[in-house]
Length: 109
Length: 114
Image 1 (cartoon, one colour):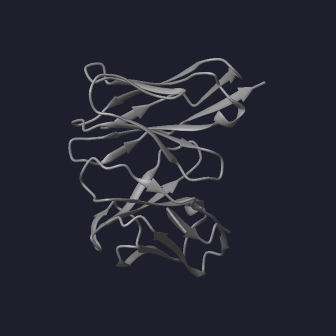
Image 2 (cartoon, rainbow over the protein chains, first blue to last red):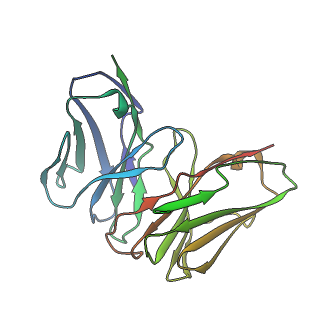
């Protein structure tokens, strides 16, 4: 079967750096997405990786290794507003989006 | 308004009620999606419409009935639901289904079935 694994919950300190990992096993691969979802709100698009390597976008970066079935989302200079759930999703060979259960990130002062 | 809107934001219903969820997108997209989000579980894709045609029905019980009258509007009709159907129902849209497009989500309807 197809599967996306990410930690259930992580805690980090304001101003620090945190890395949220995502591993996947899917039938084919057509890209990996990261979404941010604040409690009670819509998931919002953060990043998209289809080739190996690091994509940087301000304080957020996303890395992909297709051979390892692995991605991470790196958040720098953490702010309290970064407290949210971070969803990893992979588009498989049939262009279906397979979702992880999300990682709840708690930022402490 | 811009983006994807959903109404109502919150809904409480009994198992014998009939209600409908509404989604509207203002992005000019051609694909719309219904997802179910339960606590600590991955998003579950329920239905996909591409150019008003239903292209996906992921073994969803018949007590959920989608309707897509045009590319901008999507409804989810609910009847004789069960308590385990309580969840956040998210609508999303993208330019087109079946291609590597980013999906844009609405804020969701929080449904409680008593």
